[in-house]
Length: 336
Image 1 (cartoon, helix red, strand yellow):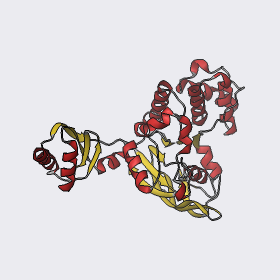
Image 2 (cartoon, rainbow, N blue to C red):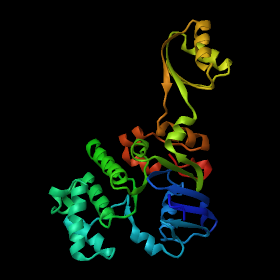
Image 3 (cartoon, one colour):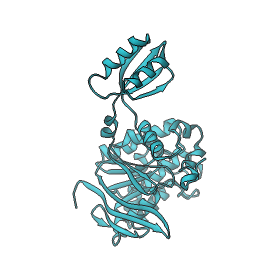
Image 4 (spheres, rainbow, N blue to C red):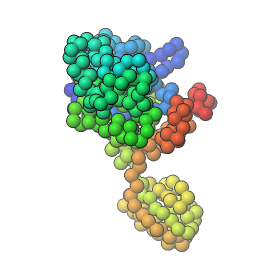
């Protein structure tokens, strides 16, 4: 095993009859924080279940923390912490005993599990609320409790599925800070599945993008963002004429009203923009390098692949829509 990799797969395939949920995935996931991206139906859940040994791969192989996903699933699950998206807590239990119970299920001595439960609840910000029943908790507190359950045995890898789902701004910020601390200070690895690109960008250095069971893109977020540099200009007067002139000059232009983003092709790009503006009498009021966000890049890639996707702002405004992101119906999906 490469000591720098926490997950590696070779031609990993999972089929359900004629339906191929994972199609020959070849992944190398390094230590640190990695975002697992893709709309519903992309294969994220199947991928997680397969690498944890919960379901058997149809073809191919893989390792997690150097352990074989086909034969050592129980050992893999003992060394990872899993924070599920779905509600997995007992509303009638006090948080301290829920977290302690999670440790005991992993084989921890009850006394050690009790001590660790106090520590992990303090770590996720629930130290003063640990004796309250989970049913009385807010959504943010429940999410924090699930994270504490995942961390109680100090795992080498934490898999967090939609960790900030349903949280308000304050709770969301604290969750992101806690995951960052786990990676930076705790020197642990995190695989984070989320539809909120801003969260992924704040926590993760690397990303995996799945599309209909296939690997669409993989690498470092910083490299992806640097791949297509753009120049953003704010135009006053003659915006349409300027956009047409730049396109005729061979520039790639994305326009939103008076704001335009032009692909930085070479060192002459800026000169070409200004020449076009002078030729058509348009005023360029502002010009600067534009750094695309991960969400910009995600939306662009998925639209090119044929998906109808929503932005994080849309999903936050209507959380129920978060689960409806899917492929268009003509591609076999069920998107609205």
